[in-house]
Image (cartoon, rainbow, N blue to C red; front, side, top):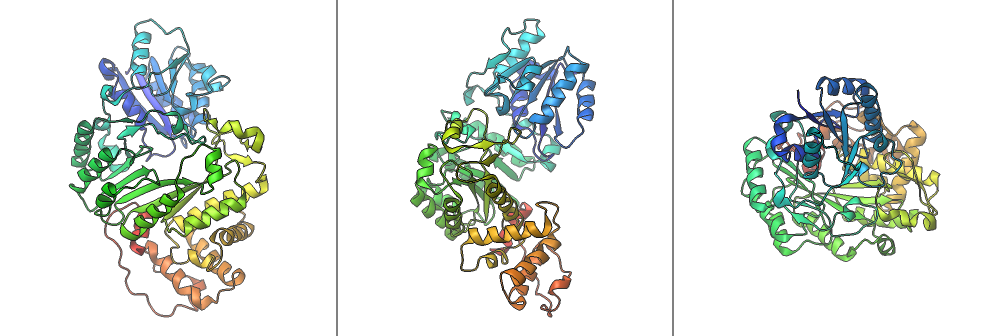
Length: 508
């Protein structure tokens, strides 16, 4: 039986816990006395409790995040009721700030705040030797990569076959955007590049083809960024897929040249725009050159096969619905494959709270702490925008309606037109989830013909082509009067990209 159990509740099975693997890799002599046991938030708490207690550990290290705080609090409470002798050590972003008054903190024995890779082993050594730390809250010193053992060999064959493989070449962020926890992670620290690339080579040899880089600023250090891209370009595989988060206004020629050499769909860039309103950017301490953002996104779409996933945030202080709509329309005009519309969240530790009084920012008290209303957007309007976010994901981002989506707005404002469709869809279904794809397609046909005024014959063919995008050939009843001839076979990309990205590549 292990003395130390490292555990957390992942949002989904596919999302394995990167942080736990770092902790295990850096346990040193204690590694042989430790194990990782992962769960998902959908599992029954009593079953999770049973599994953990069956390990009979002396210490449980629990990763606490915005997505599992409620279940984790219940789990810690139950453990302490049944086995109060087990020492529980918490870590993770949700308990690294504002610890006072958090129920889970009060229940646990210790909390390590910050990056616990090197502090956690020291605390475990003390506990196992009978010298328990005197303080409950233990701040971790910021570790340098040169002192860290890399965790990549700890990915199991099951992880590689079935789960997302997370990697990182850097930690921290040089920017100070007030809504983001990464703004607190200064300075940026780079991995030892040689050791990192050797680890990536071993993962490739084991069959890993999809890599998700969690670096907040992948393109900050041009030498590191180019070296990593060069490394993968020299090892191209038809199924290779690389996800990076990039600074939107920094794309020099040194990176452009190599990015353009990757096949379509092999690279995905998550581009955090958040807002095009420069006054709002100033208000939240966000540095962004919008002219360069536009230039870079245009270049990516016109000269590369990169899958661009761009982010906007609803509810930022100083931004009303009209301003958000202007920014949304501007981003749609740049043609990223996906636009993620996120609701502002009140993350613990972030300085966004300094605007609460002036802009009357009101957040839910429960995770994920999303904005409910502010002085410029009331609750009812915020709900409309929340639904727009969900429906945009179902329709535009999914890749299932690539030809049909632009018909919603035609020559008008994409934002206001899609908001009208969103309002109609909710009024018709009273649902934001559980809408089958076939039903959604028929509802879109109804809206475009009955509300937007399109002639059925003009939109039937785009809807029919979209309907087949996922491999369906059954002609739906609502299209049968307008589609009379069989469609020619579609030229589908044979690569095993993630499904969503593959649908966009097929269209391109």
